[in-house]
Length: 383
Ligand code: PEP
Ligand code: MN
Image (cartoon, rainbow, N blue to C red; front, side, top):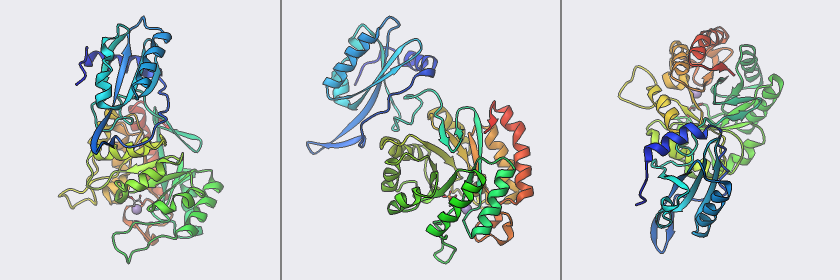
């Protein structure tokens, strides 16, 4: 085990001093567990806080040592302190004895199983570019649109409503992962073409679900962001394929996934090089049957403390009941979410999927108006 001078001190300083720290994009790829001599070897990251008097030269020397030992060096110059990182085999990290260096104030391993998406690695909020908007870090984004793209008229009318009342993005599924094989499965590529037209016409960046690793390239030609749905949160091949693109991804929580599993799924994407991840709480399955799912807003507040990634809420799938969508959207803003993704249909009565939880124009306008004081109270502004 690595010995630590003061873990609490390091945590505190990372939070205080690393607000302006820009972490060098890790250029490595791979799992945190690798086969080596037929043994599974754990990989870890340690954060090394240098003393106030340490110079850039000192930092360079330490980084060289880290690299020479076969570890990945990370350079994170802060406002008042230089912070370094080292990633690799836990045994090598231990053998380096970095805490013995007089220029090192403290050495702290990232204790969570998820590493790069954790706040220990980056204390400031990540901001993800989606169209002209930034998601995370002080704004509250509303993404809205129908559950599924049904036809040209439907997606255009729905997009017009989203735009008119202040939504910043258009959602809509072309590949629908339906529980029953007899339910509407989506228009597939044809739907993506309709979505692209509506997105361009109304100036709304689009997000759609991708359900198959073989669709990633094709889908990316038409849309601005991927959605990984609840049923695919642990489709690791899909996560890795999306991780190799640079498009933003809305990663939805699996209906039986723990928060740690959700953040490890995000880590899969991040570890492949795509850092544009937005976490989405969409409700989990519990013993409760009155609502479609149990919207876990505690998870939102929790993830915001543990991860630097933006977190949005889906109050539509989270409740399954139209009347509950607005109250839970307001609750999402109040508990610190960075936005919502909500189902809006120009006429929910004729929707081919999820009409029960979809908002019409009047409801959506009310939702937007009702959000304002809650977003302001949370210290954010509507994106
Ligand atoms: C959706 O957003 O259309 C959807 C299917 O959501 P989820 O994956 O959360 O069920
Ligand atoms: Mn839906």
